[in-house]
Image (cartoon, rainbow, N blue to C red; front, side):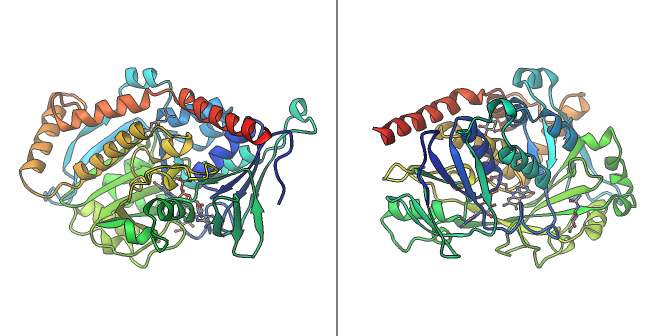
Length: 443
Ligand SMILES: Cc1cc2nc3c(=O)[nH]c(=O)nc-3n(C[C@H](O)[C@H](O)[C@H](O)COP(=O)(O)OP(=O)(O)OC[C@H]3O[C@@H](n4cnc5c(N)ncnc54)[C@H](O)[C@@H]3O)c2cc1C
Ligand SMILES: *[C@@H]1O[C@H](CO)[C@@H](O)[C@H](O)[C@H]1NC(C)=O
Ligand SMILES: *[C@@H]1O[C@H](CO)[C@@H](O)[C@H](O)[C@H]1NC(C)=O
C-alpha cells in the first residue's frame, strides 16, 4: 500500500513469532516502519494449545537486556542452573537411574555476560510483542517516529519477489521496500526462495525437507498432579526447580523443566513413535503416554499426568543457497533461513538475533543436532561409553559433560564459542547493508 516516507524504509515482516518480532524491534530502533503479518488470530495461536519452554542461552538473554527488557525478563523467567542426567530405561525398580549432574560453569557464564533463562514460549512472545508495539516515549515522539503494526489473521498466500508485494488470503495486497520472511521452516518465503534457487516452480517444502523418523512431543504437567510422582516432586520446589532433567535413552530422549515462571512442569520427548505431521499451534492426536515408549516408572507416571501435547516432526532440512532473493529485496530470518531442530538448545538465541553469518550458524546447528543424537543413541557400544564417561565424571564430583578429548567436550567447546559470541558486530553489518539499500532506494 504505502511506500516508505523520508523517516525510513517500509518493511513487511511475514510471521509474528520470535524472529519476526525481534527484527521488528531492531528495525524500528533503526528508524524503519514495519508491518508484521501473522496468520494466527492471536499471538502464539490458541490458548488451549499447551505452550512449551523457550530455553534462552546467555547470548540470547543478553540481547533482551540490551533492549531494556530486563525487568520483564526477570519477572517471567527462572535462571537455569544446569540439569540432571538420567537413563531413560535404567531398569532398576521404581526409581530413576541417575547418571550425573551438569551445572553451568559460573566462569563460563561470566565470560558470556548473561544467564541461561527459561521462559514459557508464550511469555517470551508477549514480551517481544509489547516491546515491538510500545508507543514512543515523549522524548522520541517526533512526528516521524517509526511504527510497528502487527496484523493478526493475516495469512500470506503469495509473494512477488520483484515487486516486493505480498497477497493475503483475504485478497489484500501490501507493498514494501523489503520483505522479511520470518515465517518458519514450513513458510511460504523459504519455499519461494527454494523454487527460485532450484528452478523448480513446483518445489514444496515437504518435497525437499525429509523426515528423520524422530518427532518431539511436548506437554505440561500441573503441580498438583506432578507432586504425586516422588522423583519429580522436588522439581516443583525452588531451588531444585532451577535444575532441568535430561533423560538419555535408546533412540529416545526426554527433557523436563519448570515452565518459566509458572508452577507447571514441561515435558518434551524425542520419540520415533509419532508420525503426526503436527505443529506448534494444534493439539496432537497422540498423548504423551502413547509416545513415551519403554521408560522407567517415574517417567511413565509423569507422562500419565501430562495434559494435551503438541508433536513436531524433526526433519533434515534442505539448505537454501542464499537467504536473499535474486531481486535483493526479500530475505529470510530465523527458522525460515536455517531451520533448527525443535526444542533444542540454541534455536531461540539464533532467532532473537538477526543471524546471517552462515558458517557460524551451521556450526551451532550441528552442535544442536549432535546434542539430540547424543541424547538418543541406540543401545550399543557408543551408548555404553557415553554412559561410562558421564558416570565416571559424576563419581569424581565433576560435571557429567566434562570430558576432555571426548565428543561431549566438543559440544561444550561449541557452546563456549556460541555463548561467548557478541551479536552486535554481525547485526551492525546487517543493518549497514540495509542502510545501503535505503541509500540506493533514495538515489
Ligand atoms: C506457536 C509456536 C509455539 C512454539 N513453541 C515452541 C516451544 O514450546 N518450544 C520450542 O522449542 N520451540 C517452539 N516453537 C518454535 C520456535 O519458536 C522456533 O524454533 C524458533 O524460535 C524460531 O522462531 P521463528 O520466529 O524463526 O519461527 P516460528 O516460531 O516457527 O514462527 C513462524 C511464524 O510465522 C507464521 N506464519 C507462517 N506462515 C505464515 C504465512 N503464510 N503468513 C503469515 N504468517 C505465517 C506462523 O504462524 C508463526 O507465528 C514454537 C513456534 C510457534 C510458531
Ligand atoms: C498447560 O497446558 C494447558 C493446555 O493443555 C494450558 O491450558 C495451560 O495454560 C498450560 N499451562 C501453562 C502454564 O502454560
Ligand atoms: C547465541 O548462541 C546461539 C547458539 O547458542 C547462537 O545461535 C546465536 O548466534 C548466539 N547469539 C548471540 C546473540 O550471541
